[in-house]
Amino acid sequence: MKRVMALILGVFFAGASLSAGSKTGSLYDLPSVWRNTKNEKVGLGLAKGKPVLIAMIYTSCAHSCPMTVNKINEIKRTLVEAKLEDPVVILASFDVKRDRPAKLKKYQSIRKLDESQWIFLSPESELSARELAVVLGVNYKDLGNGDFSHSNSVSLLDSQGHLVASINSLSEGTAIFVNAMKAQTK
Amino acid sequence: MIGIGLLLTNIAIAVGQAGDLVQIPSGSVEAIWLSPVAKSNIRKGPSQTRKYVRGFKAQKTAVTKGDFVEFLRENPQWDKNSISAIYADESYLKNLSQSNSKAPITYVSWFAARAYCKWKGLRLPSVNEWEYMAAASEKKYDANRDSQFLQRILNWYGEPQGGELKTVGSIYKNIYGLWDMHGLIWEWVEDFNSNFVTGESREDGSFNKDMFCGAGSMSSADKENYAAFMRFAFRSGLRGTSSVWNLGFRCVQ
Image (tube, rainbow over all chains, first blue to last red):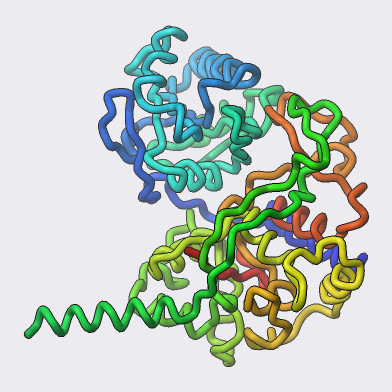
């Protein structure tokens, strides 16, 4: 049994170190289809050319999703204060059924999030949502009653869509994003 | 004339694809990987963790090396040299050149497994579907409370690891006609990232609300089905790009 647990833990830690050392591809390689708040079909690369902060949410979420928006605002403020580029934000929902474009558009206006800076995306299908979540390292489960169980992650993409930094809890510091952004401009 | 030829070809292809699938009837499986957690906002008793699974078709065996080589011939963008780094790590298809085309394909990432299933007009099973298929022994549909069956699985997990994998169809056939659900390889599922390892099962003893919104996690307290806990722990350590020597897959419809 110890042997097998060692194998399982070995896989886990091997996975962690490999991701630190290996080259990352671009999220914009993903073929997944999404819809913007105008109900137009789009790919993830719609903000290509600029750095992007990306996170996954669902609008029926009472607890952590408003906190995710706050966290992103905090990161943006920190970057601007450090005289670095203010990234565009992509918020992609994993709630295929409920978060259709009209609902996301409503959420955006209620939260007063500027359309030129904040992009809300509805997944075209479960496949799109699951694929993006796997790439971003976001765990989620549809609990079937309108609620989702999910982890909280915010990631920074460079102008070509490569994942260069991320936090996996909303209480983590924002320094990692400043450092990653500075490394980009070198 | 050409039209009839195409029609006959399509029928032949459809029959060929359907040939390796078995029908799995609708039923339910106890979601043993969902112990209710004290701080959760889901109030479920043990009886409510039984999950309904709608009937579906499943491949009798895991996808083989030979199957996957055929996929690569027609889809070279998925071969080791061409694949995007977003889809696989450096171990991708590490042992492909080794012989035995009837061994299960392994060192294959979640993205590649998904792409193969899609190419066949199929998909990966969900966790619920996979556990439902895996709950069956040779004689029982649900052997998850059969201590002998569970012990066999633990024995397989405890066997010395390494060397060449056995061929598909060599371990055991369950009551659905599915081969080697245990004892050969671990298998990918579509929603492998839908569960959490937290609380008692990790070093930090507290349920961190900043990390997770929602409920449901498995702890090692579920000693009755330790094998399921191990699968659960294994899945939660995976990434979409993970390529592991004994992790492969089968597809469903």
